[in-house]
Image 1: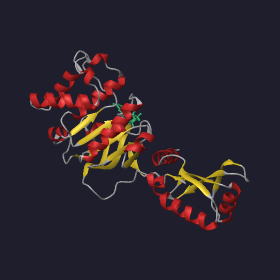
Image 2 (image 1 turned 45 degrees about the vertical axis):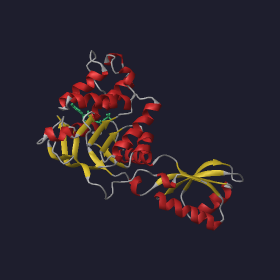
Image 3 (image 1 turned 90 degrees about the horizontal axis):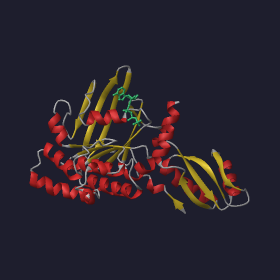
Image 4 (image 1 turned 180 degrees about the vertical axis):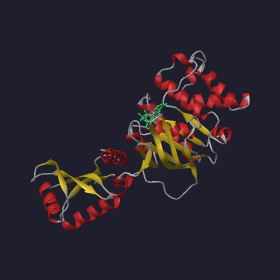
Length: 321
Ligand SMILES: Nc1ncnc2c1ncn2[C@@H]1O[C@H](COP(=O)(O)OP(=O)(O)OP(=O)(O)O)[C@@H](O)[C@H]1O
């Protein structure tokens, strides 16, 4: 039986390591637009936290506040224990920021760009040279180390932006759409690198619209809608699963008899086929398998129709309507 029951990697933040990021009641308006509306958020050290939300929901505004580049109107923020406004230099020394589009000085080489940022973080020159070589290798830009940044493609610039965010070995990483423009190999490399950074005990907060990708990399998810953090219903209660059986007739007959709300999937009643069923999380799926076995209904597969993040996101969109 193919089942993704054990693979729901994204869970709400649980008790565990200390939070690397704490946001309490933060608001930020641009004129009449309330981009952040008393938002709360925690992201823990040693974990990758996904920041998920529709266009204009406030993700970039929040990341800019965390990076110390935008002052909130109200609320409190702690990044690696420091307030980015009141204690800016200490917070910035521990924060790596990767914006969605990384502007470089095109006349500098990739190496010079990184050395310039290393100097800004007051890393001694000899140490910086070693660190920059390591990072250029990590993001597979060593061949371009001494070429002007102007020759870099969009994806290569993104990778340089990632190296820039890591130059001072920050405790907290803030990544705004880091995978945009990256080819599939680079996306896999990014995922592996972020996992390694989290395993080293760093806090990684990453926003992306590519939910399948976030699903694979994130441990926790924070959903944001209209400037507030929200918990989509799906996270805690229901999701749609694809249930397949050797006999569609036996499956639908049994589901109808036990009063389950199912929708047709595919197949004909006297052959193999599937239905769509609302299931209450992994526990509900496990119970469904037990009940089907007890009832003599031959299930052949059971899987969520979409990743947990995608389902939660779609619920969020429904809730917004
Ligand atoms: N500098 C600004 N001036 C005026 N309005 C702004 C500014 N920056 C953001 N906004 C508004 O604040 C809201 C939140 O924007 P933000 O960029 O944070 O959203 P987002 O979730 O990052 O969106 P996207 O997924 O499209 O990148 C939007 O309504 C946007 O128009």
